[in-house]
Every structure is written in C-alpha cells, then in structure tokens.
Length: 260
Image 1 (cartoon, rainbow, N blue to C red):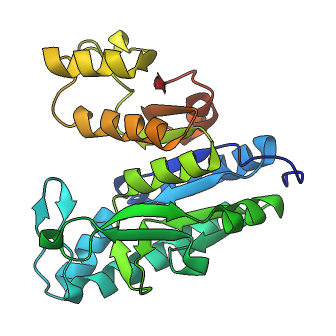
Image 2 (cartoon, rainbow, N blue to C red):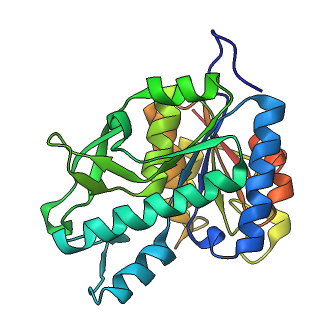
C-alpha cells in the first residue's frame, strides 16, 4: 500500500543481525514486514549484521575486537563490513518483496562523522536524508537500510544499528521498534510476567540507578531514549523472536513503550 502524497512513513523497525541468522526465521520475519507494509503503509527496516560481519572478517583473517560494545573497524575491515551489509540487505529486501536495499552511500542517505579515532572507521550519525526513504515508501517500497553511513568525503563508516534506527525514526518523526531477544523491560529479570508496559526517561534513570535495569538491558533502553531525543514520538523494545507478533510490537500490545 503506497503512502499518499501527504503521509509520513508510519514505522521504523530495527532488525538485529542475530535474528537474521536462521533462514526460516528471517523469511517469516520478511513475510511479517510485507504484511505490515500492506496494512499500514511501507516503513523503514534498519538492519545490522554482526554475525555475518564476524564471519567475513574471520574468512579474511582480520582480527576483530570491541571497545564499549562497538566493533573496532580498521581500514582493512571497513570494505568487508560494507560488502557484507550490502549483500545481507539485498537478501532481506528480496524476501520482503516490494523492498529496496540501501546503505548510506545511496544518495548519501546516512551521513556521519568519526565517533572516536581509537575505533577506526566507526561513525556517529550527523544527518539523515529522508527524501529517498519517503520517496520509496510513496512508491509502495520498503526501504531496507544497512547501518553503514558516509563521511564528508563519501568514505564509509560503520555505525551502530540501534543508533541508525533511532536517528532515522527521529528524522521521519516515526515510532521505532527495537526488536531483541527479550520481552521488554522486566521488573524482575528472572520473571517474564513482570513486564513493564510503559516508561518515561525519569523512570528509566531511576531503574538504572537502583539496579532494576542492568547489564545488557542498559544499552537497549539507552537506544530507546536516544530515539526520543532525536525526535521519534515513541520507541519500543519488544521480542523479535516471534515474527507473527510484529504488528503487536508496533502497536504497543507487546514489549515496553518509551515516551517523552
């Protein structure tokens, strides 16, 4: 279902590399995205590809390391990162059907600056050119956007996929769902029945301070808060292991919703 001339892109979904590892699950997720686009209009899919990138680096015998959760990406690695993400995006777009795979090179849709020289070719988003994304959606196509941006000179930068999704959602003023392998924020991390349905920034900061949000959940909630800061009207953290519940995640019927 194409958007009309005055419509906004209605949703952004961040799809993690780990969830793309199983071909059957990936195909089911692609079918769910196609159904969502038919029902609500095309949104934007932002994808990572960590396991595939690691496999590519291993094959090239390039050593890989992480600093603060970010992959150190040297000049010898960035070409492999770009190739892997480009091919992965093509596969996902083909499985969705009416979709187009993009990276930041395409019409400079994602622009970034070097985040930290110690990390090499790792970037921080500085601008999102929304015209291409909105134009494709208006044609009934789902933009499938890899987490690769370009710097001022047009050279590629590896960017955290959560950061890309938040920045894109902010630029489009669209809600964003971060799909992960947990139901959302839990009052008791060992009890999935203690899901917190809605949080604001003050609540999040209090829960981090008292330890109810800890470990790997901290970067997830920080990504949600960053999306709000960039201009997204709301952000969600939801379980991406059940593709048939994607619409429930975007409507807030599952997962944790973050509001300004």
